[in-house]
Length: 185
Image 1 (cartoon, one colour):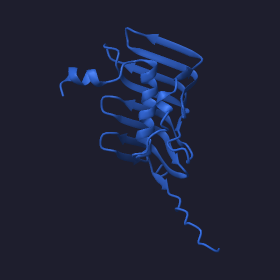
Image 2 (cartoon, one colour; image 1 turned 90 degrees about the horizontal axis):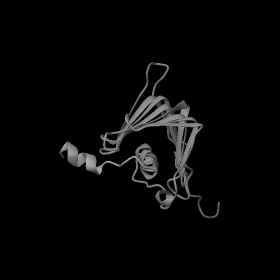
Image 3 (cartoon, one colour; image 1 turned 180 degrees about the horizontal axis):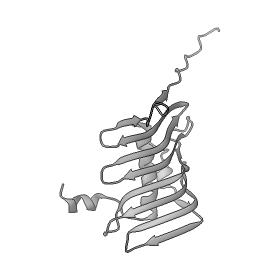
């Protein structure tokens, strides 16, 4: 695909596009084919922050101070969220930082929301990649993955997690599946 063709397929910087990256984050974090709740994408995007700085010449919007982004069951909480764009106004990168930054979204009516946190959550649009860095943690129904860094490739659906040292190793905890109760017991 030629660069100009690729650029036409990337999202533009709009409120709807900002919400879409959150939906993409949910898909990346899950490592499954599960989708968000059906009506999440149809819900309005609500962004609140103490401050917004937008610089069209640099194609950068920065929300800071108790940033909360919501769309349906999707919620992102961070100290700061940067939306980087190209000269054509297309999103190239979204970065949420905090102590830590939080992400959550319910993917099925009958389950708990998927929750993730890290000091830095970065979504690279051109490569469809998610990077959770700094005490990264993902929880789905009590099954957890923690590492210093978790990288996720949307196209290949591959995940890599790495520790930083012997004290900061990768840890995955899977709960055993509940066995159905037998009749009469």
